[in-house]
Length: 245
Ligand code: LP5
Ligand code: MN
Image (cartoon, rainbow, N blue to C red; front, side, top):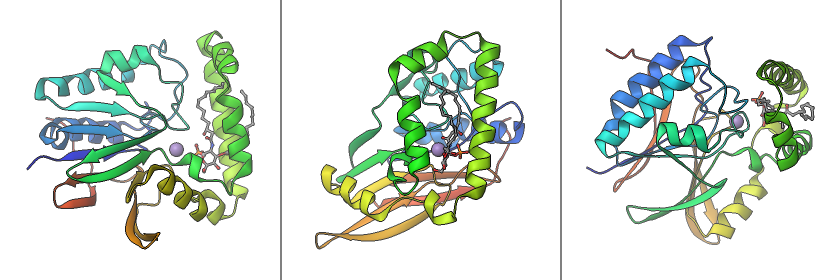
């Protein structure tokens, strides 16, 4: 049966070989059976430019590009960790870059997909940070810095972020219900799929008298998480990390 898969928040990095192996296994198995794979941001733990010679990036690009042989289309929406991922890596991995909000028509359903960070409007500190680092001129300036300097800045931003998160109450780091409704209304959708919050769940909603659903992907910490959409519906699935042969 034709199906489409969604993942987010894999947070790939050199320091987590088990997650990398689990993701490569997923690309070699489940993903090959799909019509399309949508990666909804934070594929990488931190992205500091397509010119970063990290061999992990080459391995992942090659594994993603292999999906072309199986006629699986791969799409990518930026997350808050890898918003600098650019055309060079997209081309190397055969991924199509999508805007931050995209509506899909799949098996008779209208589904909005996004990373999810823009829905966290109760966290003004983060939204301010996001507005700053999304300025084109600042990104250009950052990308022109030597790699070592970029690595240091990224490490600093990560540790500042971890400290800040430590002091934020739990609900602030979840989506805002009003922002969810406004966004789903604006796109006239009954389904929303996103990641970012690391709170995998299926949330039933009522929008203007109609049933709707917000389905949240889990982060790949101890296990894999994906959403499968086919003609039967939208299913959130978790699975253990396995290793490629
Ligand atoms: O990522 P996570 O889960 O820890 O927390 C996020 C929010 N934090 C972030 C920051 C990222 O982790 C940093 C990633 C850096 C990688 C790429 C570097 C590229 C730099 C490009 C420069 C142009 O996204 C966190 C949210 C949380 O999700 C839940 O939603 O709360 O938000 C924060 O922690 C933001 C803090 O409130 C403020 C952070 C202080 C940084 C101040 C520096 C500002 C200016 C920087 C300009 C270079
Ligand atoms: Mn995120």
